[in-house]
Image (tube, rainbow, N blue to C red; front, side, top):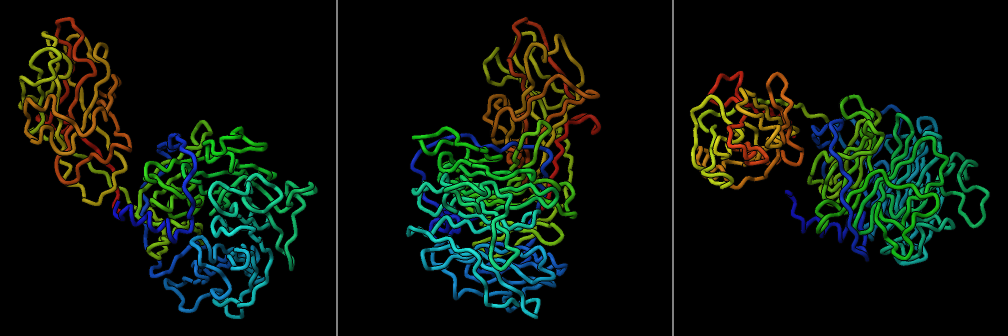
Length: 588
C-alpha cells in the first residue's frame, strides 16, 4: 500500500463518514470473492476535480446539461461543467447542518425526475437538535447554476440517543418515480436499541416516499401499508448503515451497500419485480455471520446478501463497504452489466456479475489508495468515484490492454537430474539441449527443467491482467509420465532460483517464490501445453529482470526402473517452438 495503514486507521477513527465501533464477537468466514473472466480489470482513474473538501457524493440533474453536482460533507453542492468547477456553489447550507460528527453533515442529493421542468431537488443532512436526520426539498433559482437557499422540510427523523453515527443518508428516485431513502440504525455498536428488526421505527431501513406533493405521502403499494405498529414508510429493513444504494438504469434492480459492524461487509440486492418488505438480517446477522448469538436463526422475510467480504487481520481487506453502480455507459463495453462497489478504508474495488449458474460472483478489480466515499453516475451513465481524503473526483475509464510475448532464453534454460532417487538434490545438468526431459530415468531419478523469461521489458507500473505459459511437446520416452507421475507442476521464482540465473545443480531443490503456480494436464493442443497463472499469482512476474519457472512432475518416479519422461522444446531451438510467456497488461 502506498498510503500507510496507520493513516487509514486514523482517518477512519476520526473523520471517516462510515465510522463504526469494533465488534463484540470474533466471527470468521472466508471472503466471498470469485475471479471471473467476465469482469475486466483494465480500469484507470482520471482525476476530474481536485481540491475538494470531504466529497461524499456526485450525481447529475438529468436535464441534458451534462453537469456534475458534487456534495461536500460541510454543506456545499458544487457544479462541475465545461471542464471546470464553478466558483459559486450551487447550494450552501453549511449554516443549518451539523457536521461535527464524522458521519454527520450533508449526506445525500437527488434530483426530481422532472427537474428539467419543475426545478425541484432533495437533500439529506443532519441537524443539531436530537442529532436528527432531515430530508428537505429545494428549488433552483432563475440562474440554473444557483439554487434558492430556502428549503422545505419533508421529513425529520429524531434520535432518542446521543449517537452521531449510522445516519445512512442516500436518496435516489426509483424507476417507479418514488424517492428511496436509506436510514442507519441510529448508531452505537451492535444496534443497542434493536432498530434494525423493529418495524415501528424508521431507523435501520430503506424508506419509499411519494414526494410529488408539498409534503410526502406513503405510496399505497408499500409493503406494510395498513399494518398496525409498523411504519408504513418502510420499504426494506434489517440494515445497519446502508450508506449507498443505486438502481440499475437498465432494468431497475436495486443494490444496497450496507456497512458491517467489525467482521464482514455486505452488498444486498432487490430485483426490480420486488414488492418490498425484505429483511436483510441486522442485527441478528452481520453479512453471512451470526452476530446476535442469543438468536441466530434467520429472521422472517430474511434475504441473504449477494456479496460479502471479511475485514481481514487489522482490516487488511477492508472495513466499510461503499455501494456503487451497475455500469451502463458506452465508453467501456466490456464493463457493461458489472456492478462496481468498493471499500472506504482500503480502497479496494470489486466488480460483481452473475455466472452461468446464476450465482453472484465478485472479482477484485483493483487495490487503490483512494478513500472511496461514494461512486456516482453522469448523464451518459459513466461512473465516477469520490476520494474523501484527497478531495478528488475520479472518472473510471478503460485503459488500453497490451499483449507481449516473451520467449524463453536458451542461455539460462536447461534441465537438472537429481543425484539419487528422491534425494531432492541436483547432480547432472545440461544447458545446451534443444529439448528438456521431464519425468524419471532408468534409475528412477527425476528430471526437472528450468525456463527463464526476461520480463524486465515490462514497464514498472504495468498492471498485469493475465499471464499464460506455453510449452511445446517434443516426444515421449517410455510410459507417458502424465499417466504415472501425475500433473506437471510449475514453480515460480521472481528473479532466479538459487539467486543466479545461470543453471546450477542447486536449482533442483532451491526455494521458489511460490510452488505449483502452473498445473499442466495431458491435453496438448497441436503439441502445445498451455496454462494460465491464477490472478493471485500475477504478482510474482518480475518487472525488473528474469522470471523463472521450474517444471517437475508431481511424483518423483513410478518405481519401474525404466526411463519414462516427456521432452519439451527449450530456448535453444527455433523461436517457433520455444517456450513462451504471454502477458497482458495495461498502464494505469
